[in-house]
Length: 263
Image 1 (cartoon, rainbow, N blue to C red):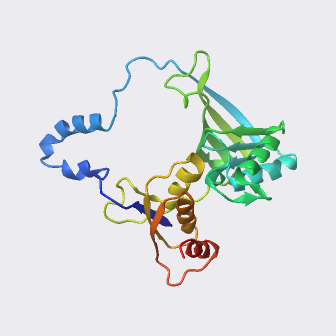
Image 2: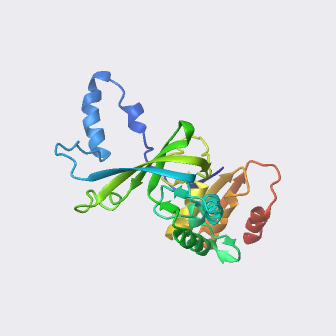
Image 3: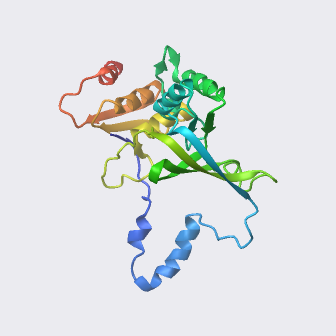
């Protein structure tokens, strides 16, 4: 895990109102209306939903959940073997962690490798690519449900005659779960104020979106991977104030690269 914090002032932490406005209990309904308004929560519409929602029954040999590097390789291997493949990912483009990576694969930037694999997969007639799609149910006997956002991710209402969402009901012979890893945050007071985030989020801002979320960085970690974030921050021309490692004597490629960058 890695954790970063922006050096500087603090802001009011999210969720403070649940603790602050609990008493007196009789006033909660009064507080609630103002809190909901401040949070941007609107009113439920009274009109009928004009959008179109579709459903399909699908069958495949291999269903792959997640289109990061592992999922793409699994899909490519199965497709080359002649299997019927469905690969779904909740993001609008395939690539997963490679979308915010500076690594190379087969001597090429990660983004180029992703583009080549996706292009090859698109050429197989028995491969279905589903971006903007959440696999929201894994039931008995390899029956899965996938919610695909067809057009409703672009606007409040889908264009006339177009489908907003489609539910895929899939029966698969084999299911491959390549959903990646979730970085665990550190727990401490005010860890939810703006400027505190997990290390991978910082690298994603810098490498994928071209945004550096601050000027000075303090990073705490218990593994080598978070040192990549410090290097990304440094390469973006910003100051790394400190790297706090819970290990006694860390060593590794990224650790050594960080030491070399600042000495």
